[in-house]
Image 1 (cartoon, rainbow, N blue to C red):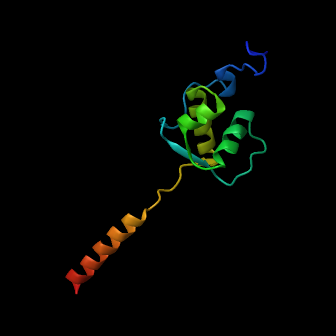
Image 2 (cartoon, rainbow, N blue to C red; image 1 turned 90 degrees about the vertical axis):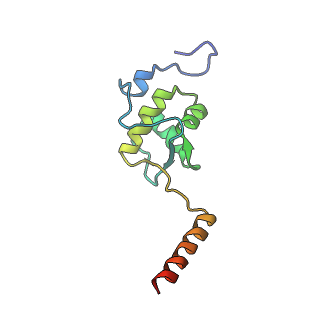
Image 3 (cartoon, rainbow, N blue to C red; image 1 turned 90 degrees about the horizontal axis):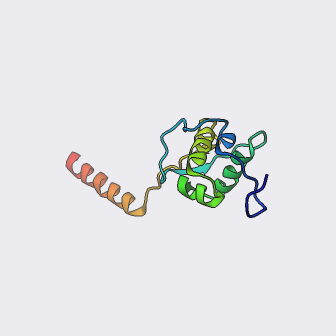
Length: 115
């Protein structure tokens, strides 16, 4: 079945999510996800599309939905599935240089007070 533009397949959201309408995790629009180094063979089409996109770097759930032109609830369900299986993770927080400098000053201060 094609939509009114003639190209894209119209697939109902419940088909893309296996009939589920809620994710297994609490995800909001700004939740960042990144692909783990795991194989995609055996994954459904939507799962593979999200994995391919997230291999390029961390993206928010909203960005994934926008890039793939999928409804947000579909992306939330599929992303939570991929997180449950270890295919997607949330990126580790990055410590900025200013944070390192602050930690060094604190450590220096502790050394001065201890000795």
